Length: 289
Image 1 (cartoon, one colour):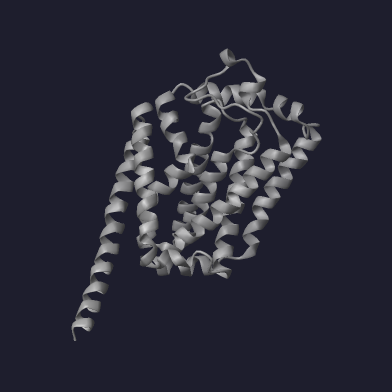
Image 2 (spheres, rainbow, N blue to C red):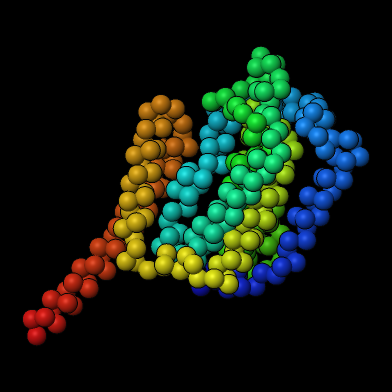
């Protein structure tokens, strides 16, 4: 599996950046034509769309509450934790891409300072699911960036060879990503364009992260089993955090994530201990001789 991931990543071309840059440029042009490159009008032109999406998605609060949690980095990483063993190159890309995504998110939120729906509309006028999102940090959507950063890494890691399967794979990833991303509108945390722009930035972040690990071996240590204790500690900490969340929110997604994490924890601990005892056995035999 890891070899296939490496081969797929090595085939990527810089031309893949053209389409997302085009879409971002198109959004800027459209906003400009509507005099919406300022905060007030940016929010104003989305009002009707926001209320429509928020109302319709808000009719399924339990489903939306669970689905939106996948946009949390810790949840997504826990769900993919098994790939630390199966495809460490994918995890190199994940870590690299996440750093890029975090930089983009922090920088753009600081620059734009767009208020969240809660700061613009009365709470009683729209649906809020879960913890209320507050503060001037709506553009871009951090959850959307996380979702598409991670899905982009997966998209190119497991890209099929046959064209018809490629099309199906790409379509599936895009639909899944948008479904998760738009839950941020459903829970009342973001405006629609926050999500769309965040998704495009997430795609760019994922690509940049992949190109970084192709050129530089900064995360190559992930493939070295002697560093597995780091992941074991992180998985244990994440498991405790999930148990805490289950106690207070009791969402299905937390149970599923915890199961995935415990399976990965068992696997990685088994692999590490097997290597540890094997090395120690050889050392004992050599010393005895």
